[in-house]
Image (cartoon, rainbow, N blue to C red):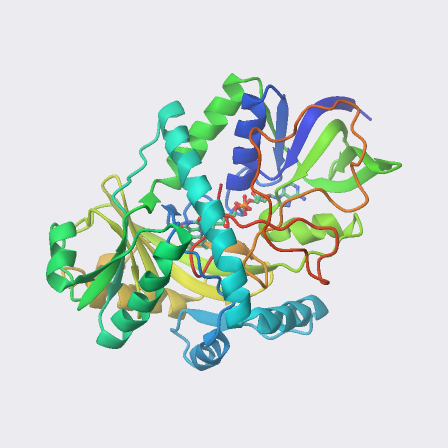
Length: 416
Ligand SMILES: Cc1cc2nc3c(=O)[nH]c(=O)nc-3n(C[C@H](O)[C@H](O)[C@H](O)COP(=O)(O)OP(=O)(O)OC[C@H]3O[C@@H](n4cnc5c(N)ncnc54)[C@H](O)[C@@H]3O)c2cc1C
């Protein structure tokens, strides 16, 4: 059995694995990134909406969301669905989500999410100088078709300044002034000027190039087992029986991470939150800003000459299959906001599906695994830069685990 040694082994080549790889390479470490899917079909990172969103400082687990979710469950084209199944992990996740969907949790979480996403934005600006990808810094427009929708978003805007996020409530004329190149059927919106967007595939390709240039290696392999010595993971075993020794192991397996941590005695409350996107290669019109469509819960992002439209949140385990009715719901919602488009424009466009790694409280899981890796042979820092400390103590559900917020959208989860 071949026996290879690696400095840092990262499991998962999605956006989280690549960003860890990039910053660790910059800090002088040699990284090996393994991913089991060379087609990149499994990863959630390639065809998402590409938004960097300080505006998303309110977690999904918020007051009112459960009642709204139950209503949506009855509509096959709605943006939310949870497939009931006899899975204790799902019911435990739902119970934790229910317990977090309150005003106290929102208040506690807002500063964590905003601190981390503003720091993330700062790092994206730095990355855009170092790597060759376009980062559009024109902001995001939360578009509203109804007065009630605009009122709801104005309430969010009113909370933004307190957490350092800029927000401007706009009437329809101001929306048109900020985004003059596309016709919109809206009553107004909220402009979050600090939000940005990019093409995730180009960004990831650049990260891979940068990591390779710094000596990093990519392997097609599946992590099956961990080999432990005392309180350290010393190696992993791949599906083909190969053993890869490593100084440190980083788990970045997206929605599949609980499968990995279970072997290490850690149960992470995480469910796949499935969403879809469709990319128009030659759109009739192109907006300048990325936007979220309030009543439709759809995300719209211009990427070069392309236009990406995405949405839905289906709590569905790790099933990546496409539900055509929900895809139709996204298309119809989009066309209502942008009258230059009709559902026929999407004929022949293949929907992409991805699984957001969703925790019940909307915060990502970052940190050492309890009981492991307490002693390092070398005492060099693992992170390229200090990470902000979480501002709340770990809860009873998550002993020893550090939880910090990342970039995500209101329906979604973390990015770099
Ligand atoms: C429609 C949609 C739109 C979105 N828009 C945005 C947005 O605008 N902004 C934003 O911040 N987020 C957005 N998201 C969320 C974002 O895409 C995800 O949070 C992010 O891609 C997760 O990245 P990841 O690296 O954790 O996981 P992934 O990209 O899923 O990568 C995990 C990788 O690990 C591999 N893997 C798993 N287990 C193993 C194993 N045992 N061995 C080897 N490899 C393994 C998998 O094959 C996969 O390639 C969106 C999501 C969706 C669905």
